[in-house]
Image (tube, rainbow, N blue to C red; front, side):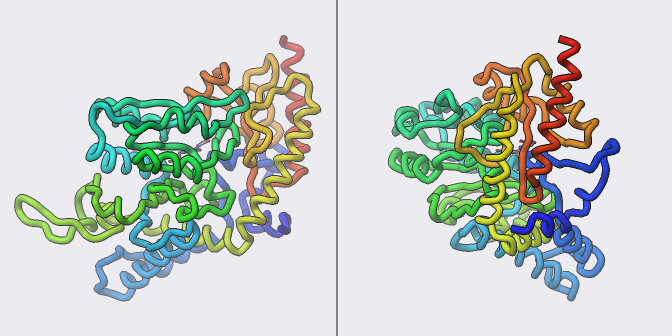
Length: 406
Ligand code: 7TS
């Protein structure tokens, strides 16, 4: 992969921040957008903007073709069997809430169990807490090993014949752990449960096949994979989605509306109430083209190289603790002794380096790690070893600066 050529596609990277060239290490929060995506959205608004699925004029047909074309691109990208299984949502959060509120409320009751892990993002915890409260079901957690992984033995121990839903993240946004979701799916199915995989941190970085994983639901966001904000995907197996009720009612999702009852459109549109996120879906389609042109395997290999280099460099800094397993995705969460992560990130920002500090929407995991917050550097296809060197220099400055204080 030619990183220089990749970087030239991201205009935002070519700027100084606080007097230094920008080093963007916060792609796990949101990725930057290549020209191809920016231009696809621009072209849609300049040339084709119209509402979809109304089929009365040329612009409407063009907009519909592009919107539905994007759905086909998503289908191919995650290796789903049919576009009926691809529902556009606002993002991962909305996708997970849709499953909890539709499948969950219809199928769970007292005595049933929902199983998640301690490493989940809040958006894969709270919908299940709320579902447990409203149905009387019990929420259970698969424990973590000291390196931030889970074992299949613990999955087998936690998932029982009472379990109705297993919900796990594919890749941790804090630890970088890559969970064995295919094996977890098999265990869920052996126990008669369905499995939802939160793929927000996986789909942008590695080849994902929902058919190979054999998951029932898979959720992800466009904005972490070079696409725009406001668009995401819920994949669901057709047989399950067909039986599920919509959670949003109104225009676009109906077949016939009578005075006192109505019927729904076929899949996937019954889950897309209201004017859909047309420009967002088109932007996501362009992002998929962009990532596929480069190749997901190339991207994974590049990030591997960067994270391995970064790990070795960070180890040279005295008093720096990293969290998570040895084999990890392209991000590193860390703390510097005696320096609050917000102070660390403020010093780095003054050097033009963007990292995230805080609880990363994973407060139960922070509690498990026995910290209140951490700093995180997350890498993507446009990051270089020079970016890592700048990070290390910045962290040494933070240590010097706060070393005087403590
Ligand atoms: N699941 C995981 C694993 C995530 O990392 C995130 C966002 C979400 C769900 C929610 O995605 P959304 O697009 O619906 O908001 N994670 C982060 C992060 O790590 N820093 O900022 C957002």
